[in-house]
Amino acid sequence: MGIITLVSSFVAKEGYTFQFTGPAPECADCPFRRVCVDKLKPGHVYRVVKVLGIKNKCRLTGSVTTVEVEEVPAKTAVPSRLAVEGMVIRFSKVQCDRRDCPYYSICRQKLLPETAKVKIVGVGKKINCPRGLPLREVDVLVID
Image (cartoon, rainbow, N blue to C red):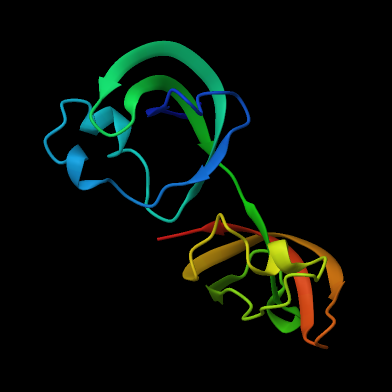
């Protein structure tokens, strides 16, 4: 069973994936805060698995819809020496400005914070980094 929460009605569709960055100031005294933002952890990545369809007004987005979400791993790159399934590491995004690189979106994964404590839950292929960095694709979960 996933987590029941609220998301903007604009994005309330199965498969929508997002990083929760924390509540906005407008959420402080909202009557829906407990179900909307209090169940989610800042920095963690979630995917909508079911749209429950109940809509409510929201001061921030205009309308929110009740959905079920699950936490999901994000694909990123880490130094090869750290790419061990089950390992917990202090993750930092690869510092790179080569936007033309085919691995740029993995190395600079938008769904992850710049730094975080993560658990490696899957190890993928070696990355052929044009800068010569020894990197490997991994799936990670942000942990507290």
